[in-house]
Figure 1 (cartoon, helix red, strand yellow):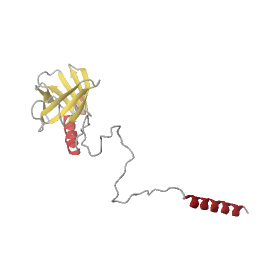
Figure 2 (cartoon, rainbow, N blue to C red):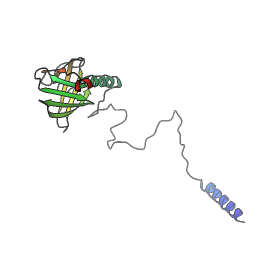
Figure 3 (spheres, rainbow, N blue to C red):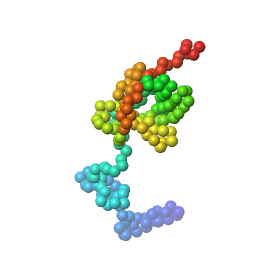
Figure 4 (cartoon, one colour):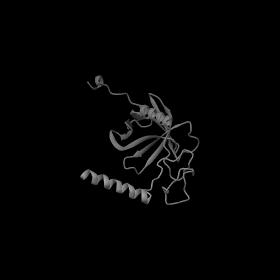
Amino acid sequence: MKLNLKLLAGCATAIALAACGGPETVDETPAAEDPIESEGSLTEDPEIGMDEAPGGDMDMSMSDADADVGNETLSALEGDWVSGDDNLSEMSILDGTVTMMYDGEVLSTETLQAVDSCPDAVGETSDMQLITMTSAEGNETLCYGIIALTEAELQLTSYPRGNTLTYIRMPAVTESDAQ
């Protein structure tokens, strides 16, 4: 008897839905030739659409090829350097961190990054690898162009000043040196 009541209730529901037109259904997947319809905008401004060119303050990140060159440059910069002008002025670069020292005392710690451009650069820089050093407090970023980078020497030009900074790579300390 219970089975018949359930069956009867199910049939009654099916008849009622059929008589009332049933639930409203919508095609889940439109045909390929149908236009894609949207129910709103991601912005509050209806004048901004997907077909507009990007603008404003966009983050212009480096391409994969530029990033590879930047990573190679950052790796080549790693090590301990002494100023060619003042042997008490030293710079140590490791894992994207620059530690500036004078007479053995740490002056600053900065983050090193390869970049595509320096806003304050004067003249053409497209053929030059560019780097920035940002202070740990983040309140100052200095931009440099790499004039020369070898195993023994580093020459940087400082923007916007344009002066040349020369550093000599310090020999790496080995275990036998420490004994």
